[in-house]
Image (cartoon, rainbow, N blue to C red; front, side, top):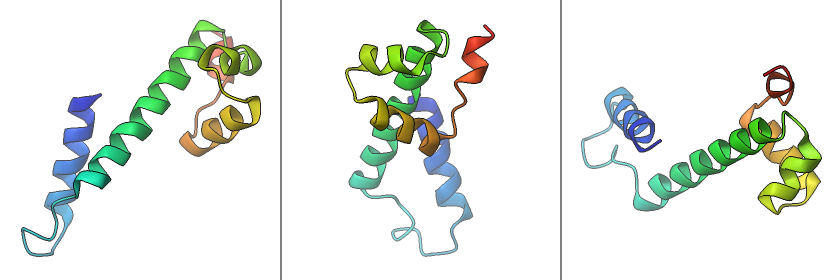
Length: 85
């Protein structure tokens, strides 16, 4: 997870045509990306553990079903893929 985040940060820095100091992400941006990646991973693990059952995954993560549904949509995760495994 950290390795992926570092890769994203490096790619952003390389693709920018701004001066070197301006293209470095702020600590807040880095923390936001890390939190989003941690949420994404936790949701995927919960869906895997519950074989794609979103209600059970929401209980496992201790979040409201609607919150989980919004996050699943936000991260582009398909619960269907976990039902087959």
